[in-house]
Image (tube, rainbow, N blue to C red; front, top):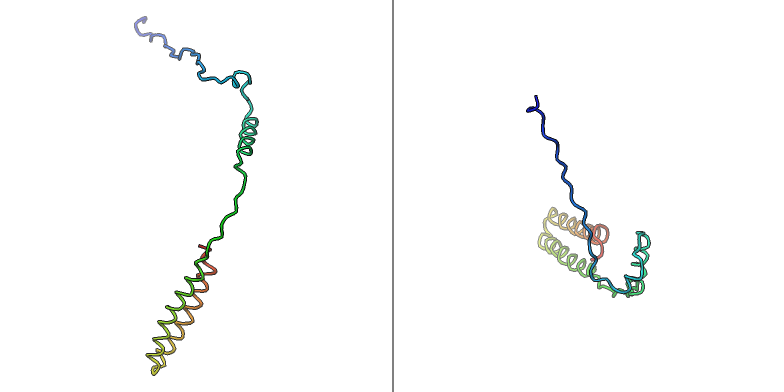
Length: 120
């Protein structure tokens, strides 16, 4: 019966270790380290303000390309349908389809350029 008893359980732990602080400045030696998170955040914020990170610079105005792109697409899109209307002016179906194409291109471009798309 003595042979069946399990051996006592071993406990493994790390031995305590003291860490040595290196590269202490004289300022850090005199001042106790801040223990509060809010104190650390306040000190960091004061450093940011002193460094001028909150100063805003005027943003230069960007040239809006939307108007030029609209007129380019408007001219060539409607020019295609106007040419189709001129070449097929004897056929009422071609003439009606070309007029409908001009309306769709115009309304579609206005919708896409000023409602769907943002400034770019």
